Length: 484
Ligand SMILES: CC(=O)N[C@H]1[C@@H](OP(=O)(O)OP(=O)(O)OC[C@H]2O[C@@H](n3ccc(=O)[nH]c3=O)[C@H](O)[C@@H]2O)O[C@H](CO)[C@@H](O)[C@@H]1O[C@H](C)C(=O)N[C@@H](C)C(=O)N[C@H](CCC(=O)N[C@@H](CCC[C@@H](N)C(=O)O)C(=O)O)C(=O)O
Ligand SMILES: Nc1ncnc2c1ncn2[C@@H]1O[C@H](COP(=O)(O)OP(=O)(O)OP(=O)(O)O)[C@@H](O)[C@H]1O
Ligand SMILES: C[C@@H](N)C(=O)N[C@H](C)C(=O)O
Image (tube, rainbow, N blue to C red):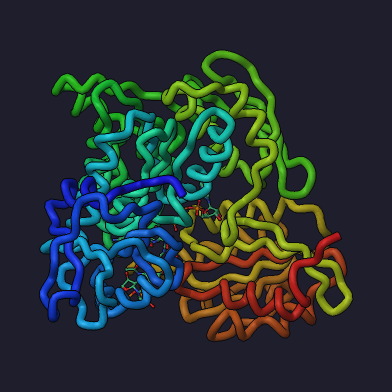
């Protein structure tokens, strides 16, 4: 077990009091310094690991109600704003006024004591994919620390940062938002050397007046860059100028931020010259990378993922990593669950491929996933679509826009779920209509009956639309993922 925090350091970082409950007739007692050491952090007792500090956050429920469970599961200490009555006698507590602020203070202290290169990733789509590519690209080049899952908000970012070991060479942080102003405090906490904006598109539009407003909010990541840092920006994006302006604006204050661009447009530092989908779920990129023509394979499908790879390579270069090693590593990279992972299923005796895109959806990522479906080899191409949420008044129009896209891509059959998808489904040519249902899980039997041997099924929707339930049910019906 390698030490992440000892009691003394954690108390100094948070300004909290080291104490335990109960051994002197219910009085809290100060424990001696360094009486505990922690190897990690957790905000959830359902996934806590032995040796973690449990941080009792307040959300819909109060994390203090789970402190006892945390110690049962092997927590080394708990960061609390009160000592719950059922805390085991003598269990070490770090008492602060506010546990969210305590977590942020630990994060800030972890940042201060690490001299590795830190990379922040934001964008309307592709944050998790790019973060995971960076993990793969940098793994052979030093000690890498990267966010778990999509930990990208006011809980996920400080949690990831507070778990940063001092001897880390490369830290990769995902930074998300669905409202203006949310990225500024997170990027200020991370203070990255490199900031990537993968793309700007109509995601979470419900909370913005326009996509330009989303670009301004994404540009906030640049504000946290360290002096002399690098912004890695999408040159093809129609809102590139807003991102670039943020760099020039802050450079007026002597910040010396450099820009690296990626895209297909002439002048991009990492310029895509050709992308070819090769074997199932893989592609070949030919690109001019800082002026040198290079070809390499990527273990993910779709030009959008190839663009994410170029952005990641730009960040590797800016962070002082080795580009050749990074390009080599990305050939073996595979997609993350829910973000395009291909699952081979034996469905009622038929071999089908399920492309699991169920983690999220917005118009840009829907279009990208439909392109991947179109390029996948297979005579029958089935789309199972749940709603794209958080699009506000634009929702009906943006859902309707999917019909022509699906037809143009040559999708054979469409199954759709949710009210927003109904008009789009009703407008499809009869031969393309599979079935519409209230929920995606209701479509399992119909999709299974419709799928032919060799079919490829792409399932996508916003996380909240629960297309993941369809993926789980179809996989279960097939008796699990088929292994050759
Ligand atoms: C607070 C928390 O950790 N919630 C997670 C929890 O949800 P639950 O409903 O159980 O929380 P409670 O309110 O009931 O509990 C309070 C605390 O008690 C803990 N606890 C509870 C029960 C128990 O038995 N033991 C316990 O210890 C509990 O963990 C709380 O600390 O569990 C859910 C299931 O695992 C989690 O899904 C939930 O996580 C929430 C959603 C979360 O935000 N987690 C972050 C670590 C994170 O970064 N998650 C990312 C996804 C982030 C995201 O959606 N980002 C948006 C952009 C950000 C927008 C921002 N404005 C915002 O609204 O957040 C994006 O578009 O990308 C991830 O999960 O990958
Ligand atoms: N650069 C991109 N442009 C368009 N779509 C993309 C891009 N990168 C990924 N996608 C699509 O978006 C989906 C989600 O990818 P990913 O999880 O990497 O994005 P994210 O920004 O982390 O999402 P979230 O905001 O939910 O955390 C993928 O399954 C894919 O369909
Ligand atoms: C799951 C969360 N990170 C997200 O991106 N939500 C949007 C609304 C979605 O699921 O598409």
